[in-house]
Image (cartoon, rainbow, N blue to C red; front, side, top):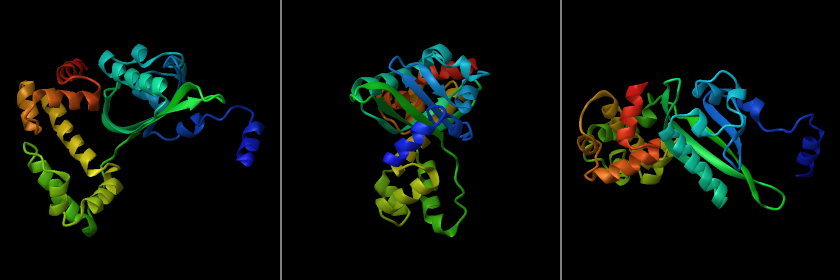
Length: 245
């Protein structure tokens, strides 16, 4: 610890990680103050917001640079971390940006504390999820489970059922799913169902209740709650926002 402090005190400028994260295009990085305003951002976040320079973001909140439903979700997350001092770890989210890019991310936010232990801000990252290469014999059983889940979304299987199809224990299946998707089996199932729902909302005029059933939800309110948690907006708001782009 003393060696780290010695190095940090010799630096010309405080180290925030900004320069490092500027070279990681699949990761959004930011530091915010207690008002939820951006103090440090990387180039990826600037691009995702459809802006030209970091100065267009600094000192602003998500609500000032993003559309209301998505911005509200981010601000609610920030407020919870800042008020409770509890980190948000590995939140699976579907993001869409001013640039019209859409994708799944794993988001983590940690409180920043001063020497007195008071929360003075937060630091966060959102990492893009990328489709893995499963073309190996080792993962053939995993592919069987994935194919089964994709073909039975109206009555989605449990993690235990998928593990049985994959001929392994739930723990073993989880390890392989984490290795290739960066997600637990349960998180991947949720992603699969929300992916279907957001496609149907964007591309069809089906009722929300019908789409909920297609995605394996017998209860529309349960579907709405889970969809809002994953995307930051209701299915109705998501449909309107996507069609406005």
